[in-house]
Structures are given as structure tokens and as C-alpha cells.
Image (cartoon, rainbow, N blue to C red; front, side, top):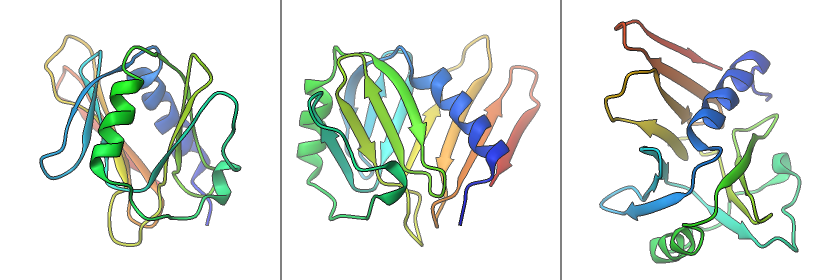
Length: 160
């Protein structure tokens, strides 16, 4: 399986819009763990994740295997530790929508993106604003989709 190139590119553009230049601002875990960002976007994480300090690096993004899900307290603790560090870059796998956040310090936060039944992660923006709002969803089976909610009421979405 391989992600559709056009959909992957469009999803990465929307992820960059919502995540790059932002920092973790808070979190909650009533049901799904959600990390809030400084611009009003949020990152929902229902899957395995891993943190890498600046001195280490993750395995190639397309070789990640699902691990047991760490306790939500560990996720929130890590989010708190990274809260003043801006996200410098994002990347998605070529075959599966594994998501890698690279921070300005070189630290990395990896989110596994392949479950046969569930969305592993999503990025959403629910606040009303003057420009378009973007949502990106990891699909069951490792795919990706996105939605743009514009101010004109013309919503656009794609899956791949």
C-alpha cells in the first residue's frame, strides 16, 4: 500500500499550516487524548507514539511498527515538557500516514498511523476565524484525508 501522492501532499500542506511554528499549549484526556496548540488547532492521538531527543533519531518513518500505547499520563507529561518548543517541520510516511513532528530543538515526536479499525490521529481546528480552517484525519488502515472548511460555506475534502 502507498499513500496517494496528491492527497499526501495536500494533507502535508494543511498539517504544516496548522502545526509548523506552533507549540503545544495544553492537553486533556476525557476519552481521546488531545494536545492543544498555541494557534487553536488540536492534535488528537489515539495510537502509539514515541519521543526522540535531539541526539537520537527514529527509524525510517515507513518502517514503524505498532507498539503498545503508552499511558496517557506519559503523553501529557511529554506535551508539557515540549510546551515552549515550536514545531519546525512535519512529515508523513510514504506508505502509511505515520506522523513525525520535528521541533526547533531537534527533538522529535512520532505518532503511529496504522490501525485496521480506528483513526490513529487527527489535526482539527474548531474555532471560528476569518480564514479557512483545516482538518486532517488519519484513516483506518493507514490512509489520510483532509477537509478545508472555508468562510464561504464551500467545504472541500479528499481521501486517499
